[in-house]
Amino acid sequence: MTTEKVYLKGNVLAEPLFNQWYAWSSLIAPATSAMFVANSHLKIMQSFINAPDVHVNALRNPAMRGGPFIGHHPDRVKDVRELLERTSKDQAEVLEFAAAVRTLSEMLETEATGISLEPLYAKVPECLRGYIELVYDLNNNASIRFIEGLLYKSRYYRESSQSIALSLCEDDERPFVLSTPQLPDAAHVYLQTPFSSPALDELFKMKVDPQPLDYIREQLGIENGDRFATFFTTEVPRRGERYACDGVRIRYYGHACLLIETRNVSIMIDPVISYQNTHGIDRYSYNDLPDRLDYVLITHNHQDHCMFETLLPLRQRIGTIIVPKSAGGALADPSLKLVLKNIGFRQVTEIDELETIEIEDGALTGLPFLGEHADLNIRTKMAHLVTLKGKSILCAADSNNIEPRLYEHVHQLVGDVDTIFLGMECDGGPLSWLYGPLLTKPLARKQDQSRRLNGSDHERGMGIIDCLRPSQVYVYAMGQEPWLTYLTSIVYTDASRPIVESNQLVAECSSRGIESERLFGRKEIELEAGRTTRAATTGGTL
Image (cartoon, rainbow, N blue to C red; front, side, top):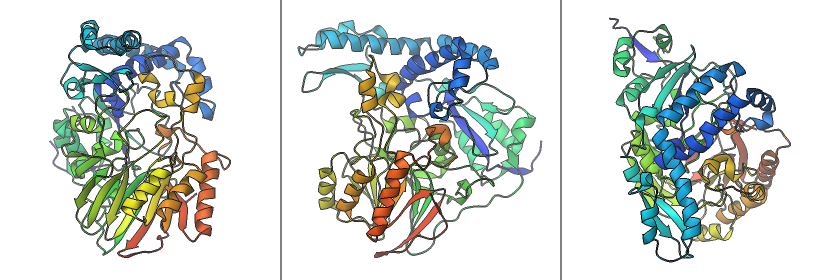
């Protein structure tokens, strides 16, 4: 047995998987995961088996990268067929659950006419009985409320479907993952362990705290293997330090990820962090993080904002995760608190609109977040107003200013905001791109294309700025960084509408004397108590 201590390398890729598919929140919540397995995974795999060349040819077109096409070579058809057959067998109860949801939805559409729903309980499919409530809204539209806490204790929540795929990340290029299952190969080591396992915390602690290789093998139940050993090094990594000055420091880590610090508190928004990489654009990585993140704030439930691949390695560093409050029980809007609690995060707090949580040096306030959810009634979304040392910072994520009067009301309550971070991916995908597997009846193409997952354009963004009167405006959450395209599939050109619109916004802000830029790669901004200083020139713009 060796006693030499080693570190987990900074470029070890740790992909969370669910039934060998890339895991995100909709594959954790029992009701939504059943729908995705039945209505997305099985269908994509069957399509690839039937016509692999169609998938290969489609992915040669960059515009099709985010579509329902498997990115494997046709010679992997046998492996995909085996996965399809295994999923159909192992997930039979889950597939029955998904079919029952569709059956019950169809029944409600024809039989729930405004009279009492009580007689319909006897007609609920057996596998759903006791796990749902039948409800009307005030206009007599019937729907299903899932009793989520109970479902997590049922046979429909399966930790055995969860695993981690370890590999080495040599550059930023990764294939789009949401439509392609992970198939075993020699480059990966697979940890058959649930996301809640404390052994994963022991593994990820080794990014900064070394342990003997035999120790972590024992923790994870891994037998000797040469490939696993390549993920570790004796080289001491660079270690991030906590901000120690008197003001407020904001670091942009890419996409919608911000680290906001004073000497007394650290707050991270929507953690999406690049692996250590000596190639490509300049960036912050795990090595730049402080040892502790007092608060992590999540703006909404989409996979590029609530990302397990980043959150799980940070779990042992996080004090409290603050998430938007869910309405509870809607199929399209599972509780993010329950998702995170069930994958091992112990301190998860919900925040409601205009609710304030007092923290050291300031406060955290939830602000309304409209748009970017294709008109679905989704409550689990929140813009976060961070107030520290007398400075106010609005992290608005993908908020779409579809109702300007909202920000007039907000301004009356919170006053002027010093710094705004605003997403401007103003095209967005159609409703079906993200929520299609949850639909229980066909959606007309015209309806689908009109309901977008989009943020503000130039005109709507300036409406927010006119109301809140900031001295700094930064466009972020654009999915431009090369280490994120595997989740967003976004590749812009200079003529892309989000680029054109955000260029207009930055130019107009600058003409008014408002410091503004579209962020890319990394950026550091320092604020002094009582006034805003200019941004440090450590970052990039695009």
